[in-house]
Length: 324
Image (spheres, rainbow, N blue to C red):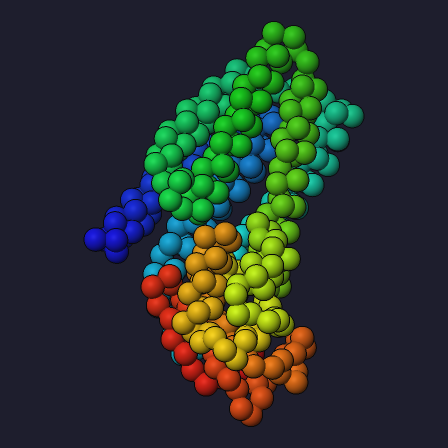
């Protein structure tokens, strides 16, 4: 039942993304052409912003499709990192586009160009309608999927850009202030840049195996050290394969009087899942710290005590050691 439920969500999310991507991509071309014809930098900058929306939708769609591929002997973690690589590329591209828009806006403010406000208003209004439809299509899946939520927020931010362009078109139509077009373009560029930096920073953190931004490592350490029967801990590592998929490895030195797989592992598994959302864990139990403790890369002692791995809340097993 659960698997079928997840599959229906994935299928529904994929369908929603395809519809939103088709709408966004079609209007993107129309808005870019319209911006060139009407000489509206605000329209062109909004088209650039909409390009990032289309890219985000494509990334989310590709992540769902590629994520369906099972892990193999070459990629034992699967294909989750594809989403992060694509997101980093998207951020770098958008950063360059935003800087170019700001440069063009500066040039336009120095020498304002005549803008055809009527065509600008019509195109921006259609863009607003497209964004509203896309948001409604994506709204149903934003609570179940981080991918969908990210795409939803992208479309939401572009909707604000369309409102800004409509405002500029109305002001130009009734006042003739052509500089307002460039001013709105600057605002859109300044709106995009910080979001681009946040996206790039998050992507790099995941690619560098950094601790997920929503997880406090000292709190994780405290949660494990306060488990009855745990004497000490070393080599604690927390990272993400992709957004929302955190993993953990650690070496725990346990009291010889306890059975670690019976008395410690279930508690550790439940605490990590409930408090931090970490469901893929690998814990090695030791009666004394291994000689290579706290090094970046090491091999286990020749006589390891035990190791336990938990992938999902209902599965765990032990083995006689590993290297990382």
